[in-house]
Length: 405
Ligand code: BGN
Image (cartoon, rainbow, N blue to C red):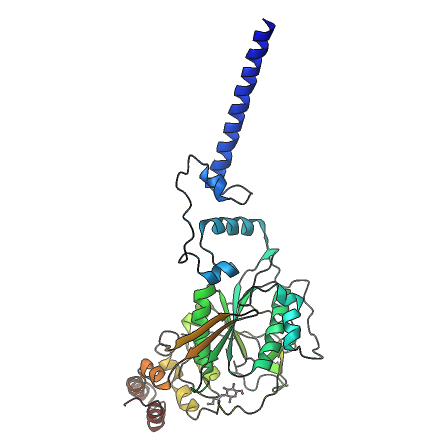
């Protein structure tokens, strides 16, 4: 009798345990399927769910391009999306002016290439020069685009310093160095456009900062983020110690959000050689009714690294002609029309490097330059009584590119 009673009670206990276990498991699975648990959801816990019989789709190479999976900027696999969602939900937003900032600092000596690779800050950077803060969520994702040719020493100094500053600013960012293949003349605007398009497809950034390779920031209160208007960050440098050389100057370092870059159609692609592409950008922004934001002079200060006159980048003799019609040309000459081929793409230790090749004639042809200049000439006559440019000189530009007028 006693034995029977014990047997009966133990049966009841076993049944109760079984019931509790099943109830617990189904609740975990249910929560998992609705992504509500605080635990990171693993495929094993999901696959146990009776309510969610669909197995997670395995990540294919097209889902997760090797670059993005390595840097975890936009990993599209379901598991990583869950992870990201949960992490993001748990983390606070990064500060606008983090306590780690130093303000104005002195640079007593520049780093060597060896020091750059041993630097602790640089070790936190992932291949391709991308970084995200580990303890907070950056409000913006920032791509630094550096148009580049033959300035390795400057590039080392700049990239090393940028990693330090941008990490102190608690930003999620990537650095992109865009090089122009020889023998084509250097074209800063076209390189910026190519950098924008590539960085966008790699990391879908919200903010794009076009940065001269020889300008070194010396104040980390100069926040490398975009604003509601384009933000010109390099207000003064050792070459222009008294501030802007002229009020419309937007050369050096400028930050444009993704929307702003699209709205102005980026830079003109037609400025081969030195000068004018930045003034042309100013005209595009003006034509789009944008105003330019700037930090105070003390904050927007840079060192201009000295360099010899660059023989492969002579002043562009057509820059004033091109500039005079920039607003009218803007919609057909920019990121919507840029012509180039990407010869190489490398995810280097501290930056992503790409080599861009183009031919002047193709670039000019693609803008429909001759046709456009005749149209704008007529428009100019009609609207302003005065022709907007010197027709003879524009034809010369076209002939230089060997396009039949
Ligand atoms: C200006 C250049 C800019 C350059 C600044 C500073 C031109 C256009 C002339 C019609 N503009 O003179 O491109 O950033 O100097 O060096 O050349």
